[in-house]
Length: 134
Length: 157
Image (cartoon, rainbow over all chains, first blue to last red; front, side):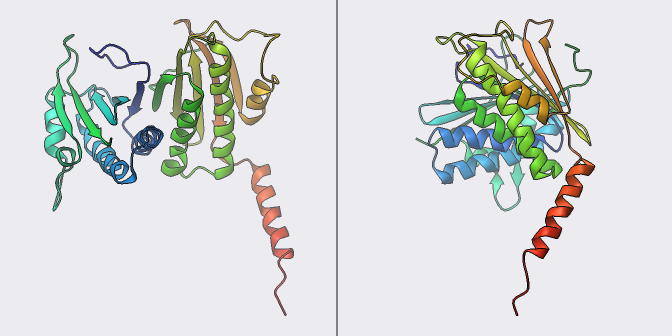
């Protein structure tokens, strides 16, 4: 599925979603289930759902081939979400787009870490987000 | 098995552990959210996919190894195809099986069609197709139930 330059993690969940009406509901459900299982408090789970809503709304415009790849890993009281198969500069533009009037940039405000990752193999850039809840 | 000609709407890959079956079930619930699929149909889909995933968790890998479980779903206006696959040795009879052996017959009765096989990649695959449109029998049954509940609910004097 997603070309990653990190070593495989046993507990990683990979999710490839075609851009469409199912993508948002599936992403939200998968992330909420993983966080609930990891003992994430409800206020932080709510933040994660806002992030998922923002990704579902803005990421399709930057999808490279009509789909988006998510890789989810929980470790030590945090969840790391990598979003891949984005167009050239798509990750930066996605972050720039995720501004809600009156709220500001949702991705920057809700996450503890947000960075663009350029895989060593030269494949499409990825957006890495981390939310801590521990 | 015949490869899908179009890209699936969802490809979920996760470790074949019992707790991840609940995650797959929960993800499939998105169908109800996004497509307003009838609750009974969604329940049947969840049950059949749960059985297929349980087979992977219980039978696909040796007890000391956790391998991958992959679930692919493709949706059209009136049909859902779910492919559950693993990297195990395939579906073979087991004399020491911990189950009752009812999983595949149950899936066959819930799905419109069921295919078992091996992909060229070596994956063992179970492909299920479900109609998302309620059958005429089911619609009649619902109508009959509505009629009964009206009769059983007399207006107080």
